[in-house]
Image 1 (tube, one colour):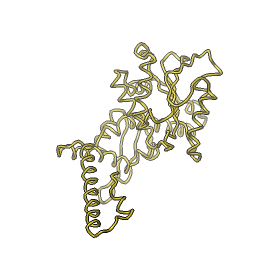
Image 2 (tube, helix red, strand yellow; image 1 turned 90 degrees about the horizontal axis):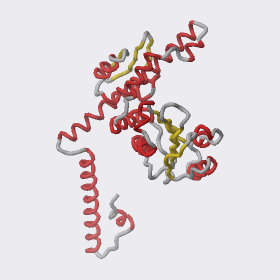
Image 3 (cartoon, rainbow, N blue to C red; image 1 turned 180 degrees about the horizontal axis):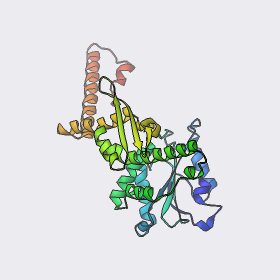
Image 4 (cartoon, rainbow, N blue to C red; image 1 turned 90 degrees about the vertical axis):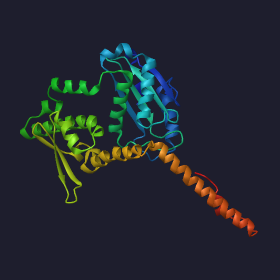
Length: 307
């Protein structure tokens, strides 16, 4: 991966290191050694490298000098819940295409030896990109994607299909891909299946929901161009239960805000109150022990710490 990113075998393509943290960039060998040195703290981790290509329309070329692209890369990491100050990473700009793009390589073992989760990475990536588009005034990828979907011809699988079964399978796969793209831009922006169905309908996608006797969602199926795709077939985050869990989260946040507190402030206040209560109880035990002429044991000492 480091050889590809640095394009050592193809220097004519003009790979350009924009920024890096915790790794050397003078050669792929040195970069890989530095990644491996930290990866060794989690030897059982299979997929230890995150590789992301961040691409932009050709029209954005004038806005995207190396400084801006370096900032975007770090904003993207934060959006993925990766601390750029406590993780090894490198971002390299390639000049082999007409449109500006860069490759980001990240160690999934941070500098404390903790594994960086890859759960929900797709939805987090979409959200991070949408925030970057808004903050930097960039062209919205969702609009570009829908335009390309209208203009693009058959997929490779569709073009190679030589039987009705293969054609049906290729068409279903394309429908699944289109549904996944639409869900990645809509699922986290709505608060109910009704709202999700309305947004997907604008993209030509239907939603069918089944419920249990208690009213909880039992299953969800998406329809597109005559094909039916279960939510779990698109991605586990799009199963009926996980979608419902996502819808419910904003309501909890709103309830907290309606009570006059920001969620983070409320949690901090509760944590502070709990810590002070522990401290008061510990001092009370200590005082009682001193009155009896006793020496507090180690377990009592532990109660004095605030975590």
